[in-house]
Length: 336
Image 1 (tube, rainbow, N blue to C red):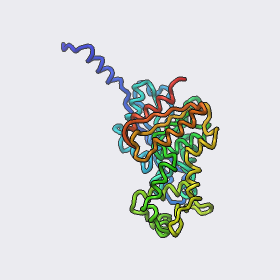
Image 2 (cartoon, rainbow, N blue to C red):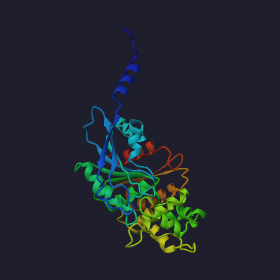
Image 3 (cartoon, helix red, strand yellow):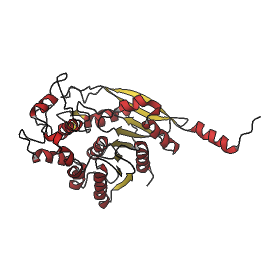
Image 4 (spheres, rainbow, N blue to C red):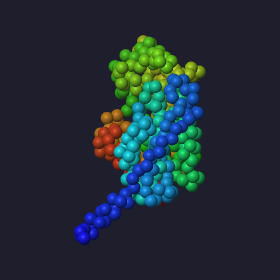
């Protein structure tokens, strides 16, 4: 008989009991996205990652995760058990916290939807709240958390505020916010000023004929304008930040500011309920400055005695997302 030290046997036991992750893929009909003005696919997939262990039937909190610009559920599906989403579920399970993590596809022609309802892109807020959430059938007593990164964290904050009865908590990692500081320098770059009326017409053209600018920042700002400043009564169209002469349009920029989460919490003392828990996160060296807005939102909410915290992580905008999500979910689920 081979003798093995006790510490080695304990290590083997822990490894055997470690919670692996199981991936389930659901087709979402997309009734809320049907007939969207861009002709983007209505039917999409949601990736659901859960612990696959002996306690798989234990009560789980539901975490709906909204990816950043250009990301989607397909990232979790293609990564399978090797994705960082699976890693987050496993890490939480090892800490005794079992969650169902549902990763959503909110892409549009431009790359992202900000998870807003816009007549220029589609009803992406309704898609999450009225279609994805009921499909997952959370139990009445189960906590539903809306989480996301970057554009997805922006959407998570606005959904947690506008659908307060549905989401008990929000985990916002590097959320788009404080647009005057973080976004204005981007939208005043030469590549954005160089976008002409013909470029705008090409961008909103029907499927198969549409053409987007080659410059990545110009494509991003086009998409953000479509989400923040849709043209009233003109499906698929939106107001651009510059007029035909290249002059800045402050009225359009104000529409952006009106949808800035920092503006929202400053204007509305009831932006979140006292019962909601709000986890805000920023990266120390965020190249987009998202940590600045997250910290300011935290300061406003903290003064109102909200259940809020802010954590600044090392690295850049998209670094260490697994650890950051795990830390946020742990905080919003901890006992008070």
